Length: 199
Image (cartoon, rainbow, N blue to C red; front, side, top):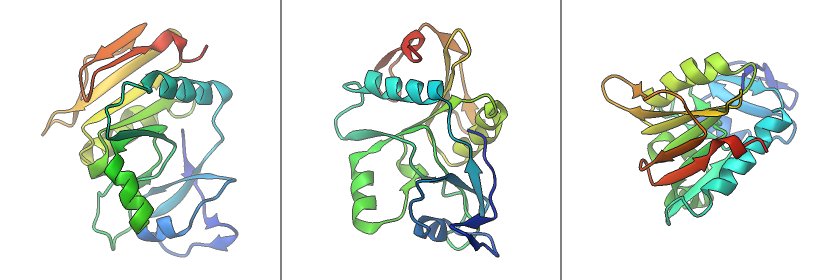
């Protein structure tokens, strides 16, 4: 999703950049989908139906393939841990993230956000206005954050998936887009029928 700067939250002006902790303390907002970009609160437009259908179908296909002890979670904040906790921070909200179950337990007990260092995989589904954000900006940010695997799903026909893997010091490397059926052994064995994501 493409995000645009948003100067306020629940009607109160934000006078300075936010840390990730301050962002997390804003709490849930059912009306908007926020991310934090270098301390600035940004809001994304509501996703299109095909976008949400693809995410739901992706979760259904992943059910039973995500290893025991891990959780696939849609649309949740992830602290990218790119700066020290007292600096204006970065938090992204991937369409899907896979983390160890212990990470969800930590958030339940301590509060705060999931962390990039806990993420095994993040997935973004490309929207009409998010192509550059997903392929360039988030690709760089997720690589800088050390997330080992980043998948970019493009719903343009034929539906395709670009599987990026971290290859230090070069950032993400990828073998190119795959359409039809996607099969991989990393970060865990998965078989996806990409042509069924929007059906």
